[in-house]
Length: 503
Image (cartoon, rainbow, N blue to C red; front, side, top):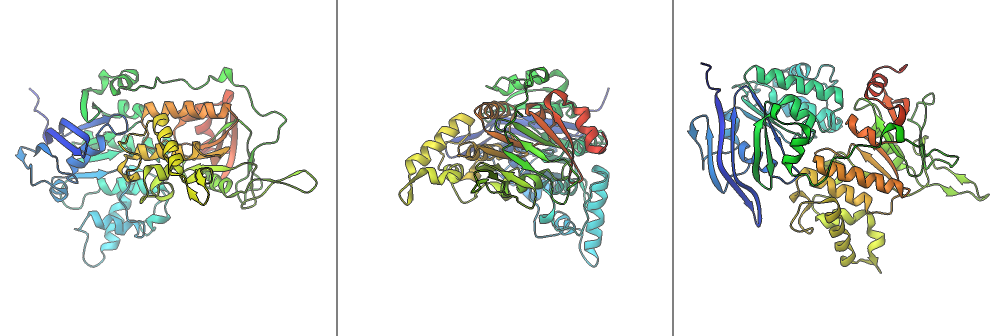
């Protein structure tokens, strides 16, 4: 007879209210050693609130918390969770951007003190980075604020799994692959399996359902603050998991390759761009009504290309009537207003002191002016319209933007861009932390807007999203190495081009 797995944490009947919002409604959760537990649900389902209770950053209004067999209700907080071996990697990263990688490691590991602590802290974090992410390219002396969001995420993950005093028993991973490309994401998920097989425990929160089904032993589905389904991962299919989440959006297939009709007629492109200092590389072009994808391993020039295009001013008519292109950084030209949906919403997206409505309307101020002032009625109408269209979960659009879950904040950034007059929309891996139902709705909106003539340039680390694009440009080492029309697009070609320029 096999031994019963060690019960590490147990939440029983946990409830949490935020004013009129019932974030958790009697949730039970058991975490055992040697298990990867998947936690899924739409944005606002209660996943992050539940993890905040488990990690000690929120106290439940009702219910019981047990660590092992000890009832710690009423005296459980962050320090108790840490002492019990719990570590967290939340969707909104907690690294200090002004400190080095080694200094950030020291914050979570106070045992790294005394003479030479920086060297020891650097060795700890780099060793774990080597173990999880071979070839990561991060140095212990790097300033975190200078790292890409993907490398910051890698550092945060490695810091959580590092051990200096006491064993790490449970690691909460909240959308850990949201900024990682497919290769690096696979490195992490392979490590997670090794970690739980060695007796550790993980909670994996992800809207990428393939990751949940391939990595987790057990899956819990949340909806409206309640657990609505819980069973072994092998008992779910992708379709049944979407159904359990209560998705109102039916999953749609992207247009089939055989249905592809090029929009590249004799008309001049709306966007042209060439990576800076890369005169020998092919150029990107995007025509009216096209959805153009940027692919390749993270950090190989895709975001830099978007920023280069965003910095370009619309073309103006020259005196002779011909169109003159404006060059940004010597390599980008656009002929219409541009909006950007940032991937790193905390740094480049939201205005944290403003309301949801203000965050949505900021790109459309000129259209909402009445004399020298903004018309609050128009601002409210725009925000309410997009809240309904893209299903932003909030009781009041005048609440602060940070009152929203991460995925709902991202929806607000979509609303800002799509509700504006921009005819060219740039998207920097914008689906980070967005649930599967909303993704399908946004894909539909993008296709509808493209059919009306809008142009999209879309960097994504999710290979499946490239199927929504008319053309895909693959980047490697700052150069464009492949242009794949949709009827030639395969995952193998994208990955091959990502690793070898002669593909």
